[in-house]
Length: 120
Image (cartoon, rainbow, N blue to C red; front, side, top):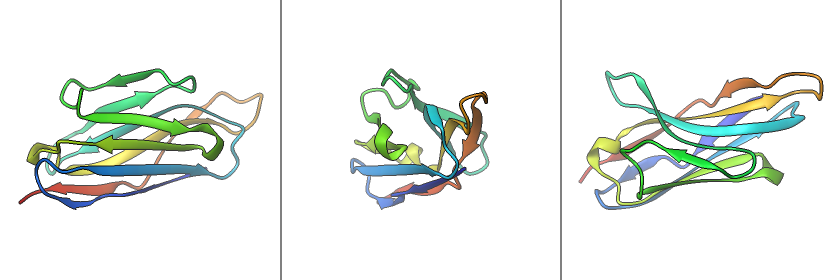
């Protein structure tokens, strides 16, 4: 199973970006999907998660600005980021809980990360 993240880049404060992360490989079922971020010199922090049924949870720091969504047919999760701030600068990682067969419990897989820089 591989997760490929994309969509990062340089954006000015107040701007928007949309991240995507597609899961591929030997997939039977994708359960929850999530985004985390890691700023330079800091630990990796939770940003948002979405269940297979569409239920969402957000970190307080991004509530009202970020929206997580998914396309189950494409095994893809998105993160729409609006009103970006310099403190949102980080490498953003996606994570997915994937079952590779009907009889297997899901395991967590991570994407490679995509850099988001918010700066004027």
